[in-house]
Image (tube, rainbow, N blue to C red; front, side):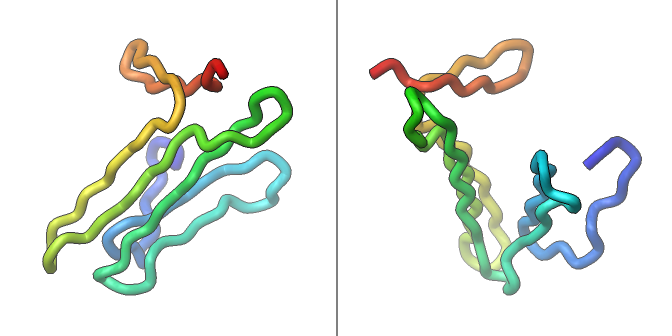
Length: 90
């Protein structure tokens, strides 16, 4: 979402918006129910093969506790507040 843009009105507990090269419109979605979570898996290629680089897992606990976990699955570094994922060295 660009600065100044408003979030979608139909957002429940979590919402995903992704801009993908080659797609005409952004990918926008979220869980249907108030107790729904979601898992986002991000892959990148290493030596021609896809490798799970990161998972983003959104949980609902009880009736109103929301939690987002960002789980790097390969090497990473944090620099100037930015998480950078690099292919693992096999």
